Length: 400
Ligand SMILES: Nc1ncnc2c1ncn2[C@@H]1O[C@H](COP(=O)(O)OP(=O)(O)OP(=O)(O)O)[C@@H](O)[C@H]1O
Ligand SMILES: O=C(O)[C@H](O)COP(=O)(O)O
Image (cartoon, rainbow, N blue to C red; front, side, top):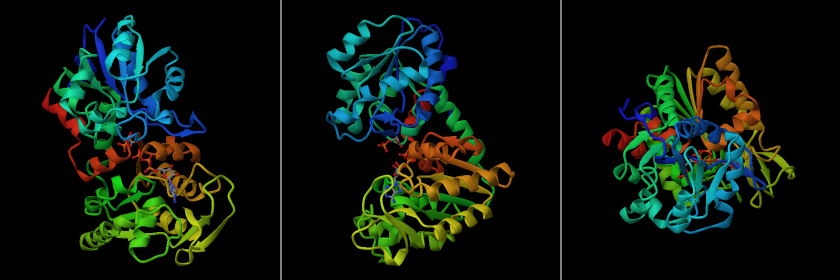
């Protein structure tokens, strides 16, 4: 594994301003954080630094605001949940750079915790510009990256800062890498991957390499609709990225060459509204009404998914099979999660799942503790699985 400095190397930090990159991109329902797993995972790093007397300054993104402030992507919405998990007061600054940040830091005592506003409210974050990174760096003496789940992004707060300040891995970054290496470094075969969810455009490219590493790729959620549409299925009003049809076709070709089975849903649960309790029906995948959307994979598909889980020695899962937040469209995800948990409990399966909503779905199914390992990372986890270098991890090693 990559060698980098950790919190063990950080001594005498009382009074030092430590910029800690965490991932607070958490699921929110009706304005409330619905799953605090990501916050719980970074809490040990925050507490440790605070107990050592550092001024702990949290940097994070929330959503994809495209470089300008968006009210419902303000981290002020997440701050109360951070306070609750830490059981410690957390101050908030309305900008991550400039006077609001500097003034708030000026007021900090040793051991205090401050959360800065969404880094993605500035275009320089995702572009990783030297100017923006330098502005961020002004606020700290030391940089700690504890956001493994955002380490696949070469952004100012995940990569750039490590070139400006002495850089260290946080406890979660360390633990995630160790656990993934242990669970999936040399996986027992057959390896089955389940990929679902909604982030189709940012994850689809990863599947090109993934099909070379696994024996079967089970596709559900919004991702499945894109593959079905590429095969000529009419997916009605379903979440689907039609312009990615060629990419999907190419992945299916790569899979055939690599001997990886592609498993697509054969039926779906459709509705005309995206809301809990919406009128719904189960239809064959070739009979999706033009005015309806698939919000979950159907019972026949669940049987097929579970059969693949039974056959697997190793399961890798990112992305729910359906819109699990709104019942009854959680059925397939819950059924597959419970089956994977049972196989794991029986000692037949090594099960590793990752992703903000995926973790939330496993918690919803009541089985997160039964999986071999649950990562907070979704995209980063898939890229790690592909064997890609993660910029946020690589820079910690290079600068160590
Ligand atoms: N058929 C579907 N139609 C619409 N949305 C869906 C469908 N299936 C799943 N989803 C949505 O996918 C979202 C989760 O997808 P996402 O790709 O963000 O997964 P994740 O586990 O959070 O990974 P990451 O950590 O990379 O974000 C959920 O909010 C769920 O409602
Ligand atoms: O939720 C995630 O996977 C991470 O926070 C990264 O978010 P992003 O896909 O918007 O970069």
